[in-house]
Image (cartoon, rainbow, N blue to C red):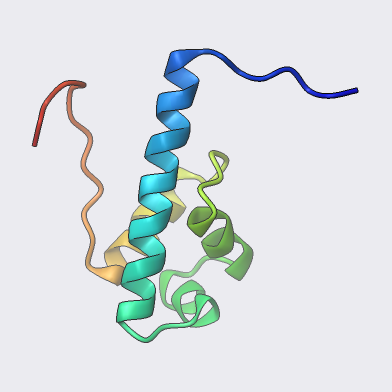
Length: 85
């Protein structure tokens, strides 16, 4: 049986934000000439965690995201919704 589509606007926004994070992480990793395995070793996370992050999985732990971002020279920024920065 097909799974019902999630029509919750907040969930759709979160999925969009996850996709944006995933794209930035993957592009930055490639620009630095790193493989997923190399990034995982440098960030002290598993390769499957890097892969999940690059696919926009919502189950990636915040600590893993910040470790990967740090290695890539990226900042994780949390701000109020609607803040256009």
